Image 1 (spheres, rainbow, N blue to C red):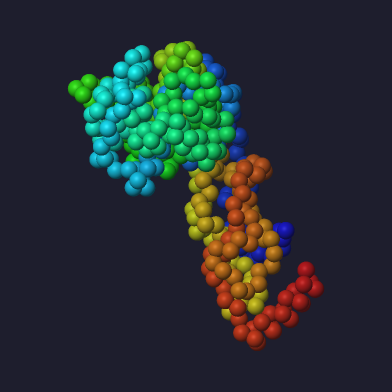
Image 2 (image 1 turned 135 degrees about the vertical axis):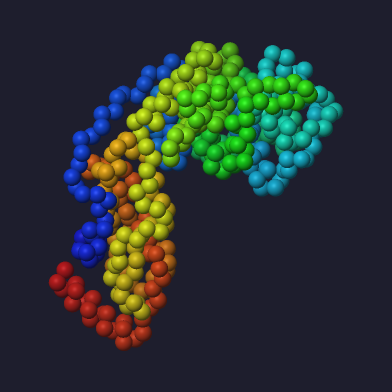
Length: 390
């Protein structure tokens, strides 16, 4: 690897420093809060950085957190055009509300035609097990077939500790997930299916003249801006809650699984969300397309190419520590034309208090075509002489 200080102009090196090397006293961050639950995790939605966790990979029954996966698949099908909100679904006997006497339901009836828009809200807001079965059969033909889709999507998202046997989350032998996997799924819903995620903030939904409230009590908490996501409860699973909240330019996702009551899952979720917002922040030191420096190019029509990044450097760090960020880079080779725009030529390193916290590809931001015969010949002799002195 070629260190930047060897080949980059000294005038350009100055542009690499985010701030002066003077540091301020590090903010003291207390230990993560204790959480009265079997498992929990707190992550930054944008960067995926884990801010607090305990037993986050433990295999647990998800209960109605399962509906996050059902919802995500519906959201993707709507986004792709395979489904339309106004499409009608005929309720089968398997999806009849009477099959779920002691669990949450939308109260749909056999033989009725219901719009996907209504069924979707029945899943997200009313947590209807009957609505889940109706949509599973509509999409995959059978609920078993839909479970296969669920597991395929779980693999795609990297949910290595999850296995789904049904679309609703009622206890089943092998039906398992983890807090970490649920955080991956929550991030995917927010990022990939924003229209679907918008449903999670709706507080009420009425179907068949039955008005039901969203079970996520944090939607009513005026002390924080929670706009999702999903509760879950069975006697086996305990009380669980996936929450998403925003403050300033930061969005956090918390997953609490296996609390002792609905009140506890809400209070414990609020506790860790407040911890994250109080002691961390999401910053973007450089936006995509930022130019770090101009670098010498041999054998080209022009002698320099601009170097930078094609993705924004979004980072989650301790609150108040952005002034201690530094960035440097190194080239993987000397640059010779022709050079394509966007060609990776090295790495960018971001450090906080001397510790590397992120790496990004260093790329060329413009194209350099090969020069003519005379230019290439002169550059050959210049490069040779330059090599003697370096």
